[in-house]
Image 1: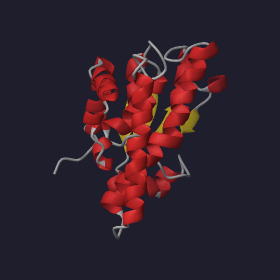
Image 2: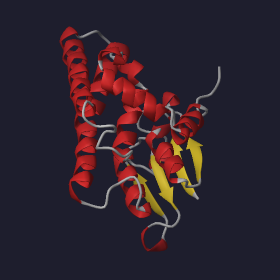
Image 3: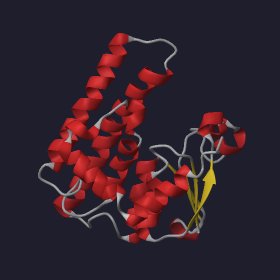
Image 4: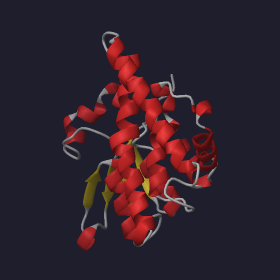
Length: 212
């Protein structure tokens, strides 16, 4: 059984979504980032970078215990290990990687910085707010254009590219992003959110948040 260290965050949710879609058993271990548990020595012994998620595969390469960090790397690892959610080669495979890297260099940073400067920065910096709010809208426009001619992020099939995008768009309220101006993204998001595996993963991840 896989072990996942996670919390209810945009990056964390991707791993349970992938595991649920792949039909793999896993245990979900909460790491409360609101309390700084990801910075505690016990967790940093697993991931020195002090971030969630982390995947532990008891039967990794050569049958040995394998620890992997970074959600996109975990998605690729699981897809390649199972032979699912990632085309074998050619243009279809290249499109999946194109979208994953577009997310990690475009959507993810834009949403993260927009949210930080809106909600967490110790002071309001108008230039930073304008910069990242504009960038968040711009990259959503790019993704909307992709989905204008594509059912899913990288083509007609659901892949790890869709899972990569789902995380931050699921938590888009942090960056105050409204999907109403991006009809293709709205259509895609509703379709992904409705998938039974995605619903199960979201339910499990949100249950990690302690109730007041």
